[in-house]
Length: 230
Image 1 (cartoon, helix red, strand yellow):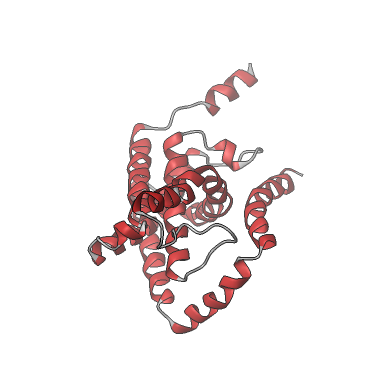
Image 2 (spheres, rainbow, N blue to C red):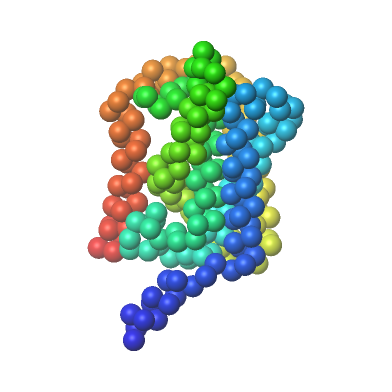
């Protein structure tokens, strides 16, 4: 009987308002990914291109709060399996993809063989296929990376406002997200940060580093969950 109750609660549908937010979040993420294609980016007004990037700050933090309200306690299994709603998965995945591509482009970094910026010599159709393959085409890998890095961090930040009224908690998280977004934008313009990331670029291109960036986000959440249950 208890197993039946647990199964029913595990499959409890996402509240309509929360799901509507994540659908909107995913659409903004898809627009963000599309806007980073260099052909599109070169034709967008600078303010629109920057807005499509900075809006991910408040949206991500609010999404972190809503995701934690859906799962107040960590599950025993891996996080990537615990998040069942497709809109929630898509929102985090596309936002993570947008921010990752923007970072790689801003500092001319490639993660080993992974470089979403197509060679300039390619014709437009081939450039579009290249970009789509390294952005939307890597959706599952980006989802795993998002739930291994972004989601745990956002859940930790959301903890103090978890039991506050939703509007108040979401407002606080949105302000925090906006502050982080503008803070990172300011930091990215500083010469010291640019020099540091420039020297980091060569290190990130090493194959063993790429493997570590893929494996560590998958392993750490499981280790933390096992440590808590021990």
